[in-house]
Length: 386
Image (cartoon, rainbow, N blue to C red; front, side, top):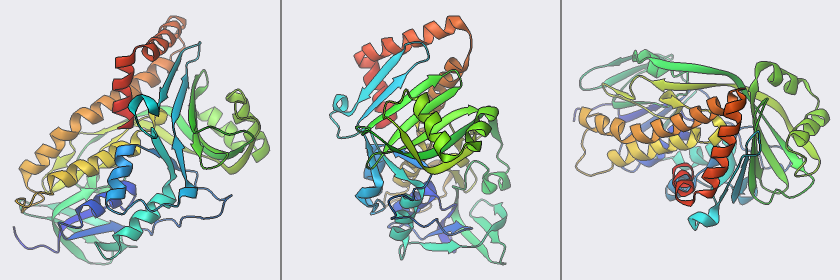
């Protein structure tokens, strides 16, 4: 392999990019480019990041194996059960015991996990923070990235981990099909009057999809996927009114709520890159695909990309991380899981988003039947919580 500044340059230091850098660090000369330093993790009991992720057991084990999961236990919640309700009596429940597991997922703040990953990266990869990529070119034997400070970096493999609006993907001329749902995900955190019991709750409602995720102690994080008008209405409420609205929407199952973090919102869209690889380039995470958050699988798909690519490049006989045959294998290996999860999430969103009364009965019947069909339910659990 020809000599380059780095074997692998990852553009984007969020959770997926940082985890990939950590996974590759023992085998390759890796650089991680991130225009801004990661957010600082808080240890204050009443200060919480509004961006909360539900990380599957397999992906948590992946991060722990590299020393990237060093989040204090007081900042990590557990999902032991999941209770999903349709809009007309439908019900499906998932329990970790059905998988002989301790939990279905762990809930963790974006800032806490990102800070943990960056701490683990120190001394193991080259961290290039505060600089921005402004030009890129891709040749048969290398990728070249020019920074806004005048530096030019050459690498055998460039990885786009810079999100749904990926600059590097666009610089490579890769199309990205984006279909907006006409919804925003409204997020906020609350203190609860009663214990959540490590149960995640989700309701398919006529005004969107509401999910409550358990946090440590008597706290929850919510994602309310709803239209722009409802989103604006929720964000305009003061803390007390917002807490009452969210509590009422969930049937006050946890009693009264108290707002910890104000409501924020992000647009929802189904997105898929035309290809996840190109000459000397691989796409991971939201740069490659986005999904509706109703199943909480966005970050888990991204970690799956990181795990897969790292495994492809781990064998000792691999001497060129950007070789075309390796990138083709990566693309094939990720295609089924990404397609399955995108199709499932998109299908559920469309099904429960319809106002057709005939569909209302069918979808709720299907939800309840799946709940009673043990083998099918276990297949869904393995897909979502592996």
